[in-house]
Length: 82
Image 1 (cartoon, rainbow, N blue to C red):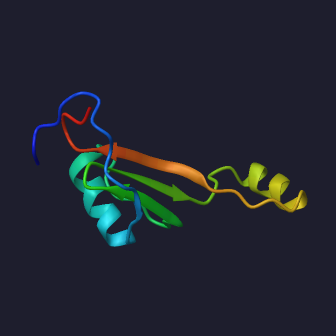
Image 2 (cartoon, rainbow, N blue to C red):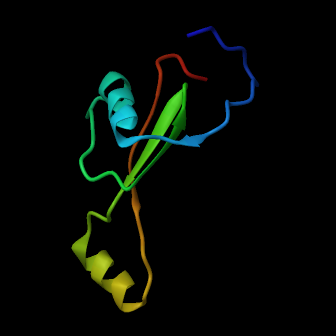
């Protein structure tokens, strides 16, 4: 990857394939890949991965209020990312 100067804009963000997101997490996040990915967003510099809520109590509460929620499970960027 090229060296980046300060204040450069990030590349466009895309919906990522789960496999691609987990490959990025394997390389860049100390906890590694995630099971049960609902949504993965990112670009060549980083990745965000969302899953179902971990808290069953919150999930029940939101369901009663007819709300659907997801939770940020991992966020990672390549080393030396500004």
